[in-house]
Image (cartoon, rainbow, N blue to C red; front, side, top):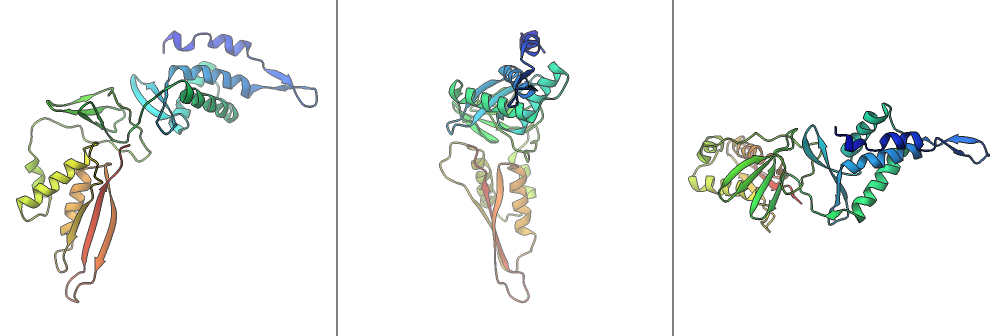
Length: 267
């Protein structure tokens, strides 16, 4: 950690008032105020901005890579607590943290630039960016001339507690390798499936794409679940099953079942 990050921190710790007159005229400890001042100064290491909806966001550096967190999120608070511990070798109070976070959020709102954040998929200047979800916060950049894995994309992604890492892509191979995992009768059906999967990864499409897979009454029960599982695996963390319905089949056959698979909004 550079010395610039801790410039004058020692002075703040030494000079901040430790006591203040209480309501009864006696001296009382003023620890939260002192700690809040330190936390606010430490937060200057983050790059603050806000979303079009007014949410305060921070870019922070952890182990050499960039992460993006909402200022009021547990991730940002943990990062700030750790920085405080590095300086003071002690913990900070919850009251001090609340004052500091509220202040940092105000700075992000009024002094930071406005910039959108995304979940898993984003578009920028003709390229598509896919958050790998790994611990290094890497991103896949897909452009007209090819794709590559990059460390710091021009867009910002947020993550939830349920975000899981995608496999790192490799060059070569063919989309036809997916065919054997899908229980489809014709090549046209496979083309529709591939088209739906690719559409989920398009951030600029105005349509809310929903894939509908139906198993007719009397068909093998595992037919549709296999294809649905294939779609969910290839669009991991970008789609979800949003509905299921059944119609009555005959006494000798299972009922017809329909699954709907929809993309998760990336904005």
